[in-house]
Image (cartoon, rainbow, N blue to C red):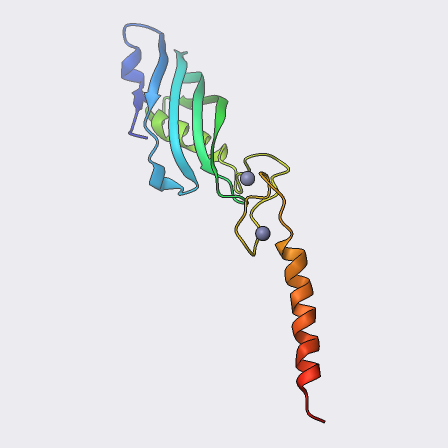
Length: 155
Ligand SMILES: [Zn+2]
Ligand SMILES: [Zn+2]
């Protein structure tokens, strides 16, 4: 997110600044968990004597890679935020505030759905789409191999 500096000087004419549905730039390399971002922010900043209060929201979509089955999926984003700063601070980077709010909303382990079954460790099949029994069979083969080695032992 680019800097978005708001200072007390911005309120010389009006005590209130409103911004609606502006495209938010969110760099994807920031967290490589995020594959796409289509985000828009709106806010109202209100100046009082020595404090500025901001209420706003960030809406849109973010794309993630499922941490279990690796498919790409999109999730709706709907974040509300509040912040304020005082005259001593003078100016404030609202861009950083927006960025932090989006980062807090990024799941540590994205899942395409809560009960995603993931990929088969053996054949790579997406187990959400169809069942395979490789893992069970692999277990059997392992046992079979063990026995065949025993059979080959020369006593
Ligand atoms: Zn998944
Ligand atoms: Zn399999």
